[in-house]
Length: 298
Image (cartoon, rainbow, N blue to C red; front, side, top):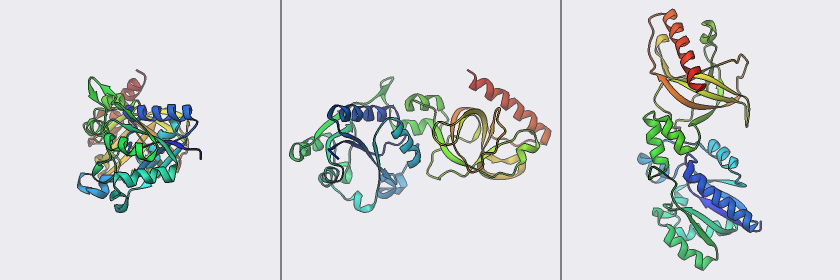
């Protein structure tokens, strides 16, 4: 390797602020004929240093890798965040980046800090750069109505069901990757066949339970995309309290057990509710279907 332009951080969500950092990495890597590298962590550092404060994740590691690759970054490094890594001071961390990845340039977000106690802020790293022969570039915040876009504000929006704001700050609809598991097959008996996602990683942040209009991409990569509606939560009509993600795809009637899927939340249509009869449920599902189609056709 001739050398690398590198950035590092949690990059949870790969939002528009993160995308600006990666765009600068790519620009500098092309200009210097260097390799573009992103180093990120699993688990989230707070899960190790302060588990009670660890947030739910916008992007699980595989989701993050796909989003980073889509930005054109050549090398994605998932560094295990261990208690030993947590104790590295900023100087030791920088030495490790130089030694392991031949770092020639480091691109940082304006508010980034790394190393023990997040002491590796922009000022300290610029001092280290002079002694260890690498360049530092700092990318300013990307703002929306004056407010810096951050993973924290996006998590708050999603937790409160504000999908429109989250999508604006992410630069895309909020989504989840998963695999299709086997359900009870009940939907087919009432004329609304469904696919069931396997239970998601408990670390993944979900919006409030309810019935949603969704867009679903089947298969890995750029597979076929379908509109649909998803029941996220329990199924009280059938006495089932376990949260499930059950999706009825429009204009689709294939078998996709075990297949990877990507589900985008578009709009919450209503809360989960119990129905007094099968007929009442079917009637409501037909109203949901019409509402979801109308939402997706806007």
